[in-house]
Length: 167
Image (cartoon, rainbow, N blue to C red; front, side, top):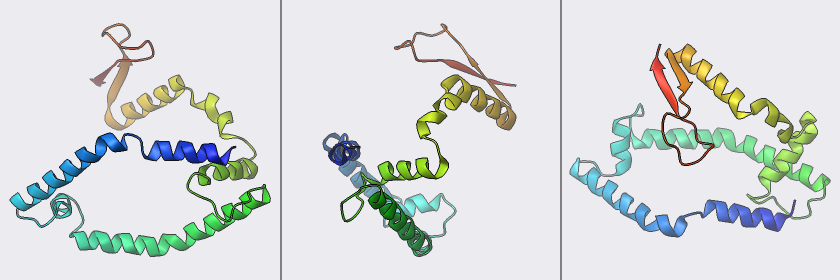
């Protein structure tokens, strides 16, 4: 509920491993540019597009711009509604920041739907979710996924190992 704590958590989350990964990201970008030149392309985006449905980088840019134009008004309306809701509930700042949105969205959902997300937890217990997932995999892909308890060494008691078998 504390906004400063939400901000600290948000900033820590979005910058995790940033210092460690920055040099790696820089190296990856350099290597991708070199690869593009070797393959006869101007950019890595062109290399990537070659294997995809889009006809060109420009086509992707056009689609992105079209989606922005279509989605932005709805997003702005939703944010305005969420801000109004937050202010009704005691939010005193001028605008919601990125770390405020999930908190107030959850409060709004609780009011609209009449229950807290935590109340859903029993329905999504891991064994239930795995059973549903494995049944879906069998139906869609014709495979059986069977736990292989004790067949391989694991590093933690909570780690599970499964066999994936063609039916």
